[in-house]
Length: 288
Length: 288
Image (tube, rainbow over all chains, first blue to last red):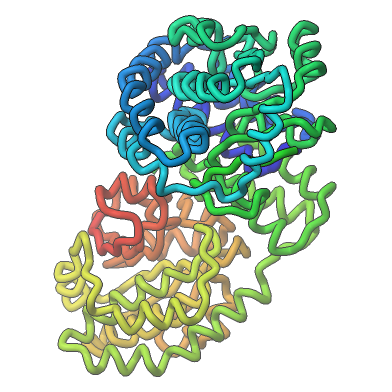
């Protein structure tokens, strides 16, 4: 999905939110704002927004001389999600269709996303979890996904945000319950960007208990294939099935030629909602 | 009110809305977007947003080679408001407090504003008019305004948007009914900017029937005093009372040292609502 001018505001909001969260002084903030505007005025708009946002974030972290401004907040969100894990498993167990509920839980976990302006408190997340079975997938290719996963051997799961990763792990454990032969590789970002998952987060939630964990080698808030490591590209090429979580992965991979990608996401901005012809806040499981 | 970084999105949205309304081709749109971003990256943030927005609008109109892109739409909105005028007068007449209702009508007419993203249809405006007496001023210095206007001789009325100007004229006619000695000067923008009133609009609604009409000599979407004509500045200095309509006039004059300005506006963006500590959509009459 090519960059859209509406994403300019998303880039600017990222600057405002990060500098506000970190209580950056006005002079430094002004330098960042000006540099980001000049960058946005010259960048190649044929790129996807996650690729362009990477440049914006690079300016922020360079000026602040902090490589990972959200470090402590990410730990907090992982902990909050870990605290909810046993209740999430309970709800999934009690459901008539555990696999389907586990999938929807993984998407609802995507509520935890600083990039789209949400600093979700635990109550909102808890409520979303309790109501998960009242929410239906607005585009639903999940049956095809589950059939594929039963027949195939390898799954590459592209992570998205911290906190949410706890729900990913639970979903993966259900997928492996259904098909114990399934080999799952969980990919995280290669560098910190906003609240996207990195190796720190996968370690914190012990993702290695259910999947082989790899870094994608890049620092975009999505999967910009050409910028990822050769190791990641090889996994991407060989995987039988790919699950790509969140808007960032959708925006950067929606034009991929692979026909084995399932995008699991909540539409968090007007633009993605419009592209998918659904209401903002809707959840979907879409085959590429 | 100094420019706030939140206003960056407002400037960018103005580019997107105008180019979309005029169905500008992608290449021209890209040139405008890039130029505006470079401009916003270098402009002096000590200015007010109306002053900065003037530069953004200048880039748009220069690139499009159209000095007044909203020309025909403004006529349409003036006509729509003129069609409602007799009903507006009826409601005011039937009210227990005609002067107060006329004042609120003048503010509600401010619903017609393309700058803040509203392309209001006639039904919404009609509904707002019918319900005007259910809406109360969230900050209300109107009694002081009316007392002032009874005692004083000259009123300078700073217009805001097309369409709305019809309601201004009705309000002014009521002010003159109460104080027939009141000399009213109605000021319009010196150049076209978005849907702000110019001499074209004042002629169309026959403002000269109730007021002397002058241009402020400038093309900002507000009143940037230093850029206005000497004639306007002289009126501004000598007027007993000044009524400044809309957000643009508030943003550009809120730090004025004059203590005789009454700001009549509807808070249309989060920032102005926050500054005034009211909810977005609220209407106010505030003495400087």
